[in-house]
Length: 362
Image: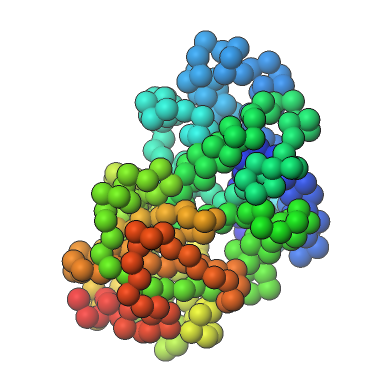
């Protein structure tokens, strides 16, 4: 299986520190070697390096981002030498968390300094799990006493929580764990989300799909919690009952590449195995394309709403409709859309609306 790198992030007083011990106990019991990359901001601030001690916020952010990237590189290098069959690197916050503390201009300056794109930073992690701050839904439990680097009021913490979710929106595997239950159940839900992503005991994907009216693109692009992603999807020759596809995913000329194999279990549930590819691997595999199907090109709008992660796919061959998808942890989970998204019908399990079917008909 190799090495998987995930981020556990969240707003102030969300339970990240406790979450790390829950994840270690649960995943170690499943046979994983679990490595933890400590939170960089807390290290720097408690060591005297902070936005208010450096020459400017942007200079501090450059320092923090460089250290974060170097630490992750060291952990990845160490993991590559380990004999364990399954290795999980858990980052206590990732590079995109810094985005919530910068203006657009400051973030652009940091990217230039690092020689990185937003896609490269965001999608270098296999999955991101956001724990919602206690300031949203559990304000009686909000405190700054357990972290010397934390200074936010509950109102500031709630606003920061929103900015952090927005910073990670656009990642292919973002999950938000809210405060709808007590804290222990919140930790259990986090572990369940992580193990489901890792495919323990089996890599199931539970997804609902809806046909919607063509969305207001200007409205979507104006939202801080929405991110546009360009996708090119190519289907490979696959055995009966299975499906293998390649995906180029990114924006503004910066892309990442994946190969995904799917097998249907029920109308809602599929076994899904995904692996990241280099550009060279992707180009080689394109030679195995199923020539009976065309490439699917689409613009995906990733939207976080009510702690759900909704993906809206807009196709160039449809001017009046689009597809909205949402992955669930349980088949009984309810789906809530913003009022601006008008649902025509639920098309979960309707093969006419599968991308693989559309690739034959366009």
